[in-house]
Amino acid sequence: MTLKQTPLNAVHRAMGAKMVDFGGWDMPVNYGSQIDEHHQVRNDCGMFDVCHMRVVDAKGEGVRAFLRYLLANNADKLTLPGKALYSAMLRPGGGVIDDLIIYFMSEQWFRIVVNAGTADKDIVWMKQQAAEFKPTPTLPYQGGSEGANSPPLTRGGREGLLTITSRDDLAMVAVQGPNARAKVWQVLPQTRAATEGLQNFQAADCGEYFVARTGYTGEDGFEVMLPKEKVEEFWYALNKAGVPPIGLGARDTLRLEAGMNLYGQDMDESINPLEAGMAWTVDIKSERDFIGKAALLANPPSKKLVGLLLLDRGVLRGHQKVRTAHGEGEITSGSFSPTLNQSIALARVPKEVQIGDQVQVAIRDKMLAAKVVKYPFARNGKGLI
Amino acid sequence: MSNPSNLKYTASHEWVKSEADGTISIGITQHAQELLGDMVFVETPAVGRKLKAKEEVAVVESVKAAADVYAPVSGEVTAVNSELDSAPEAINADPYAAWMFRMKPDNAADVATLMDAAAYQAVVENEAH
Image 1 (cartoon, each protein chain N blue to C red):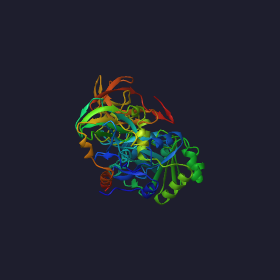
Image 2 (cartoon, chains in turn orange, brown; image 1 turned 90 degrees about the horizontal axis):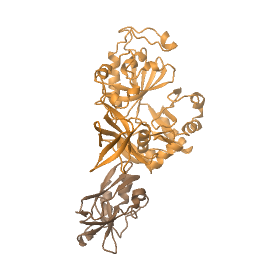
Image 3 (cartoon, helix red, strand yellow; image 1 turned 30 degrees about the vertical axis):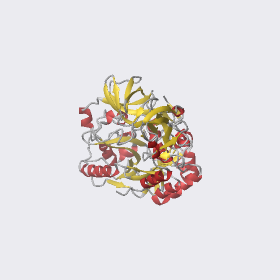
Image 4 (cartoon, rainbow over the protein chains, first blue to last red; image 1 turned 45 degrees about the vertical axis):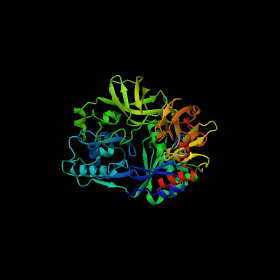
């Protein structure tokens, strides 16, 4: 199988990247030392090629009502244009199709960013659901003036006006770290006025550049979506401004320290989001119905996701078995934490396990001691354990 | 970094150095450290452990992955480099100086049958294709 390439593929090679197969994409894992790249982002800033992730635009009448039904988190939390929301998208059985970020730009336009490996199935699912979606007249949007003034949705009235478009014409670069925003403004001064006031999890549409104060590292920064033809120029301009490229290796240790789930590792279609540390994103208490809600209500979680800190020497890895006083669990993501200089993991364990418990992890022929801790492990340049 | 010509090599990417006292020192090659990336943990064997050739004897772990280290020949472990406990990154800095353990081979002639630098280089180049 030929690996898919982002528009920056040749650039990575020219910059000395070691390339790996990442879910069918030929991606840079590092440009030298993964640990140095990790610290670079925590202490200064770095840039990531995230063109493999997919931007999807949901547009038209009734898009909010549709997303309210499609997603486990509640689109009605988005009242201010530009605001972003993290959510899971579930199968009717409750399994996680994907985790994603939606940006509310207007009542006619929500932008969605989904994972690379799941993008195709996500879009098929969204289009299928959009085609079948019948807005429920009993739950009109009440949250903001624009929504309140929009025409009421009536059953069967407006489907077909809703469009789901995969924005294959767009590239995406994440610039992350305490100095990331300043570097982006240096390179794209025209976006500064519109993006200076952005709070965390807010975005601004600056014409060709869509700038979001979001990321996957636990650091401040922007994710910038832009036309594919412009991405190489943007990448080199950032580099010239002193922003080094960071590979997917450091991206993984950064997100793990920040306690952020990785789709396919920490959850997938066989996993209940409430057993994957996603309860905070699942709006199950509101009256609103959404795909997967009935299944979640019918199947209360028996497990939960916790953080582990390895007390003995070694490295925690995905799929290692965890022995607890309440039964067996399993590590979903594990690695070495460059910030803590110790091995850390996310593990799915029986829900009775408490923070502070000591557990044992089977690593090769040994049982090593680990402590259950509250995550995130590190954010904003600092270890939190 | 080229592979030193005074060492012997295995297809599983260990280097073997014959010491003056008849023991051999074992580490992992430049190619192996490059593949694994930043080292964060080394698990060395117990001194006195008897090994068969190609038996798993040690483990190196980078941020990215864990890899087994194999005994190049049969013999007994005579020493381990405990400095790697606190400084596994020494393997990245200079893989041919960062020996992991020493062995007394059961049969000294076994060492001569291992690959030389040129043969090992061919293995590495073959892997790249």
